[in-house]
Image (cartoon, rainbow, N blue to C red):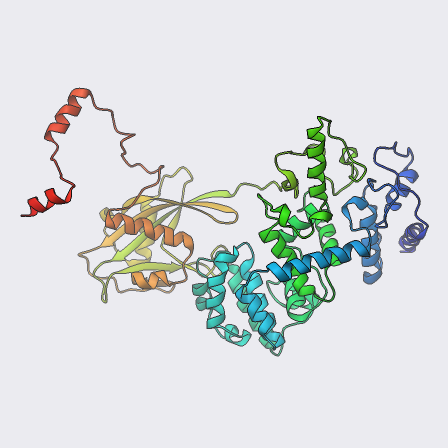
Length: 549
């Protein structure tokens, strides 16, 4: 322990020394380990004499009391990053805040959760309104969320209303929005708040600590927008804005880069208007600094954007037929030292412009699975035709939702027909095997699974209606099905079944359906004979009228 304290004291003493001129990345590196350590520690967020300096790797940080450790770790993190990627002084930060907030006041979209939060006097109701919107907006487009949010707040206007609802009701309203665990976490969070006396925690730290399903981003959004806490937030839109404004080309999904982005967000957030500032940063990323076609001419912080400056410089070099080379205002990534620069293996792409930032993380392809699923319908059931649904387990993918009976199938597409029939009979009793028909397939991709459903149908017409309903099953009318807690994938499956019943089902390319392109080509003589014997069916109105007479 004494050794660790000594190391910490030495590190802190070195970092308090007057800062000397920063070595550039293009200079020859010091040969000794001592020289390399001094170079790391000499890079601070203070404006350097040579702004293109790159720093070395982040040194080890010893254990210390949490508050002191956090502050000193932030200093060390900054020391391992070139000032090129940082905001150099408070004046620059102030201009960034003013420009962004002025733009937001003029251009912000009129959204129902913003109106509700701005007009709500009660802090707990305001926090609830923000909480619901932030959870719904995760991985979901604004246009999709608006209708769901409006219906949700009409049904459960307060936390107490949501806490007293059933999970079935929550799943039913959430159906089609995706990522269904979000709705469950919202309800469990509301129940936790009721247990806490009905008051939502006011700080990001306590929100994240006490409420289930509330992570760092959601906690920061609620605390800043509803309670005015000066805490920054980082979502996908903010990542894109910060990476472009400070030319951060390293993988934003890495731990080190993520820490730097959160640090920048905390540095930038306006203490006077933290909620508006965070919403402005997200709004900028959603409407102007977009992934594919950013509208840089409309950006309120364009003059401070490193990515835009890089584009202009590259265009100038190209117009003068000069080779690309690091600028004095650019962090030189070729040395491989700066941990926020893009790796040398990913050179600048002239066609992308500012969209070179942020670096696209490599994603693993979703796991492929196959399932055989059947729509079992009683056409002559009491009260009208009904279809069978079974409930999924309470945990895991699509927890608690309703679906058609199914069994796991082989990825090759071969369906265990007998296993599917046995599954159906376990829920509904004896069934005619000859009526089980393959209708086509549906491919639906979840966040990490690409699931192919081999769709079957079994319609019971003359049989005695099935009256047994084991636990976890339901017989629903078609109208009830469309309002039930079912996933989008099940609605796709049902459309295939309905289309087949109506004779309008368009089977997928992979299903074994005879089409003109797959039929054997006829000889010219056979085509003449077929044409002669094929009955003529008129299509014009006058011919049809004469035939009817």
